[in-house]
Image 1 (cartoon, helix red, strand yellow):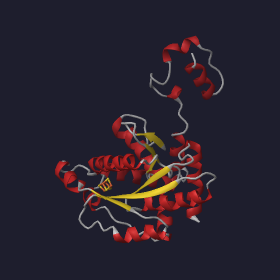
Image 2: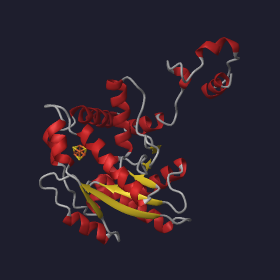
Image 3: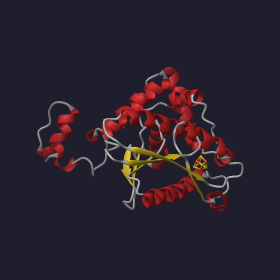
Length: 268
Ligand code: SF4
């Protein structure tokens, strides 16, 4: 049941943001975790019913963490009809060496991982790289940026890498994490745990995640509202001069809804 809901939400994200085009070769970045594994299964189901052809290529990066055992996961991917490509690169030692004590490993770890995966996609000529971030990752990032970084930003469903070589997509952008957890158990994904992050964790992220979860017990639609807010920006209700022509306000006629107000001011 969860899988069908996830499929529908994923189709909605793909069509809303034009994530996959005819003929795309999509590299599915799997980490050995539940999110990207479920993404592979759901994208495969969508591919089989899609009105246009595209292909999926699961790739996993073995960062040489002690105890990172790939075999069971590789076999599980094979049962889904795919051959898993495993890249091997010892970023583990670099992350341990370069991260200051008490700081989260995730920042450097994910930067190094991104570089290796992006290079591989470029070398193999993949048009898209699919990442398994879900609705609750987007919401948590939004609040972290608000609380700690002084900006309103989240994780976009589609973006071009800084060097312009890769297009990254997040097909699970609308999907709640709880549905992914349920689907992952039903699919018996042999999850490979990350020893690095469990050793020091990303405390701020975990706190924000818990905050959203706690509030959701009182306000069940709060997470959905957070997601919708990212699709519903009211530049006129914020303070950013680069997105709203405050200096030209006197010259325009304001009336009607915020949307009308915005378009009238921005078109001045
Ligand atoms: S969760 Fe683990 S593998 Fe992922 S970025 Fe953090 S340290 Fe790296």
